[in-house]
Length: 330
Image (cartoon, rainbow, N blue to C red):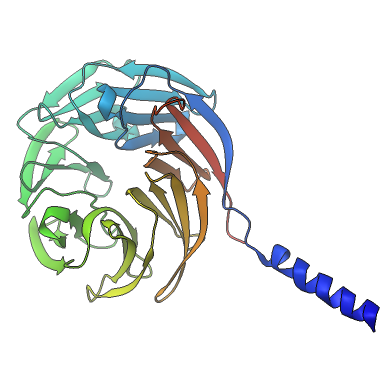
């Protein structure tokens, strides 16, 4: 009887260890970026050539890294508070938004020589590419989404908003763009084809709603907020909030993995938070992976199963990129 009881006690203690979900991220390599100072902003990638492009806003540079070689390839200097970056493989074109001089600058993707620029985009920020319409969107000014033809490198239109936009993902199977507008305490739903705001979803009880991630198939929009630190989920049909949960502080990037129903959130407080989404409204934080203070800019490759996080220089910690492998669905 005592032996049986002892076995059951051991089994009770061991079972949770086997039941616990393994960490979804594993650090693979750290790539140092010496002489890079200040914070990072947005990032882009060219997975086919294993290149990463990280905007070093505080350093006024764009840092280009070879992921497979684990080293810096090139630095584009002379930028003016760079904020957003895109790489368009079909055009072999790099685009960098600059907040201080209000320009979008276009660079050759091989030589990195400047090929053109658009001026007059005050406080230019985030850049996104609509692969269906073959146009680039840029957030800028006192509140607008600019529309750019990347072939001619010209501004072709502008969609007015109440305040400056932050993240703005859009539907693949529809015309809607979901725009975080933190100073207006709202999410704006924009018709990208008609170029107008269709609806606004108020956010009266939270502030600093910056990153977003869209699960189009399951009709969910996820929003990271800093004050208070919360992760929200909205029904994209009704615009109603259906779930929320605490998140670590200073969240800046948010990614949804359709294959695993996971969310990855890079938080400047010093963590990558991992959440599991259980439709229709389950939202559970499964892991808090310690990183470094101020490390809040990231980029995810779902195809190649890696996540890269930019770590700024603070104290004894030098600027670097940390590359993690991402586990697949279980």
